[in-house]
Each structure stands twice: as structure tokens, then as C-alpha cells.
Length: 309
Ligand SMILES: *[C@@H]1O[C@H](CO)[C@@H](O)[C@H](O)[C@H]1NC(C)=O
Ligand SMILES: *[C@@H]1O[C@H](CO)[C@@H](O)[C@H](O)[C@H]1NC(C)=O
Image (cartoon, rainbow, N blue to C red; front, side):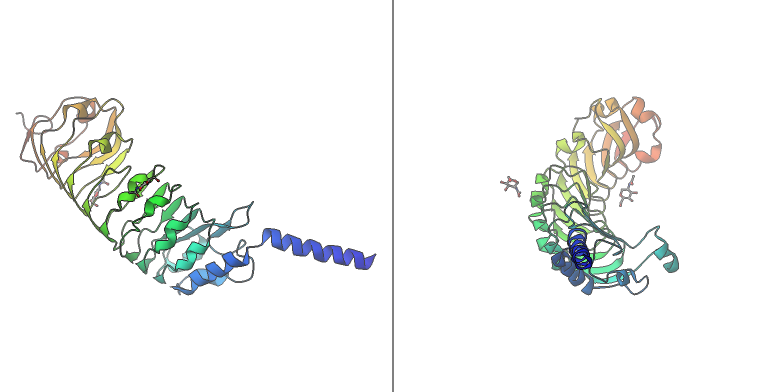
């Protein structure tokens, strides 16, 4: 009887650890990922020991059903108490190992604000079919965005702002139909733009004409400031237009401010300054609260809040 109980218990424990534990392949991939990184101040990787990567490995979480690694969330700025000793910010060097791509159920990858992580974004990242969030803001990543990034059909967030990424915006980005937040600002990305969905492309070196569809695509925070966009602003706004931010400053836009902009239901922050616009500023409620600075440094704009025409 005792033997039977003992065997049952062993079987139970073995089953429990196989069910709840982290698959050895995921664990190996995480350890290979860790091996290419160096984080000496906080010691967050000290917690990445033992066999069960699903429990108490800092920043790692597993899917409760599949028990595969689903999220990696490593932020150099965090409210976590572990950050208290480093004055609430961390520093990490090294590179992002392609072994990350072996975590085939990965849904969210955040490696943000570590300031020192360099090298390329692994090309193989586009083979992670479940990836929804890719947030690599605030590192020193270089190289270009993978050309076939459009393969990440589930991607909703792509944030690579404040890195050293160069090259062109991949055409395949237009295939990311679920993308809700795209932030490429503060990089060296250049090239003409195809039709894109939602974005923050400020402070890159983009040029060319803006597709009209960009202004009525449902993006509410559109910052194209400090690029080299040119041409006329399309007259495509309507009562369905809603912008918390519409920042088109520091480009080469010319012509007049589209009349339809005054029909927009809401424009929180509008900045058209530092372009080559001319003509009368439209009247209407979205313009009532705007200050002269929103229109300054153009060729010949006039009317409220600037001087009368
Ligand atoms: C977008 O997706 C379609 C259908 O999957 C594919 O044929 C096309 O080549 C893709 N475009 C780009 C630029 O990747
Ligand atoms: C838009 O981007 C520019 C350049 O990065 C920045 O200076 C500006 O504050 C941004 N505008 C808004 C409204 O956030």
C-alpha cells in the first residue's frame, strides 16, 4: 500500500511538473537569449535559474493552457521594486539573440529602454506567427527593419522608436492589417512612403507625397513632424476626422489649409508651423482654441489667430 502510494505520488509529481513546467526547448532558448545580454546593475537575470521558466523568471510569463513562453517583458524603466536600487532605470548591453525565434508561441516581446542593446533585430523574428507586440524602444539597435515584417499578421504594436535603425520602411508593412500602433520615430529610417496605417514617423528623413488615405485612416495621433514631406494637404477631412494630435510641422507642405479640416469633429493639438502654406486659415470649431504658434513660420497664412488677411 505504501509502495503504491509512493509510486502514485511520484507519478503525480512528474506529471505536475511536465504540465506546469516550462518546456526544455523554451528554457534553452531563454538561456541562449540571456547569454547574449549583460545586465550588471539590477541582476534581473539572476532569477533565470532552475528548470521552470514559467515561474519566477523575471519578465517571463507562460500561456496557462499551452505552458509555452508567451510574454517576455523586460523594461529598463519600471515600477518594479527591483528597480529601486538602480534609481528606477536600468542599463543593458549585448544583442538580441536569434534564439528568441525558437519561442514559437511568443505573443509579446518587450525589450525596452535599456539604452545599450545593439546589433540587428533578428531577421527570424518574422517567423513568430503569434507575435502581437514587438516593443524595442530606447535601445541602440541598428540595421534595417526585416523586409518581410508583413508576415507578422497578428502584430498590433510595432515600436522601435529611439534606436539607430536605418534603411527604408518595408513595403510589406502595409500588409499588417491589425497594426494599431507604429512608432518609428527617432531613427534614421528614410525613403518614400507607401500607404501606411497608423504612425509616428517624426524626425526621420521621409520625403514625398502623403497618401490622402493617411488622414482618414482612423489614426488619431499622427506625427509627421521634421520630415521632408511635400505637396498639398489633401482636402479629405470630414465629421469622422478625430485627432488628438495632428503634427505636420517642419515639412515642405505648400498650398492652403484644406477647408474640410474645419469639419473635423475634434483636433486636440494641431501644428502646421514651419511649412510653406499660404492663404486664409479656415474658420470653425476645431480652430477656435488654436494659437498662432500652430500656424507660425509659413509663407503667407492669414486670418485668426494670425493677422487678418
Ligand atoms: C502582402 O500580402 C499578400 C498576400 O499575402 C502578398 O501576396 C504580398 O506579396 C504581400 N505584400 C508585401 C509587400 O509583402
Ligand atoms: C512630434 O515629433 C517631434 C519630433 O520628434 C516632436 O518634437 C514633437 O513634440 C511631436 N509632437 C507632438 C505633438 O507630440
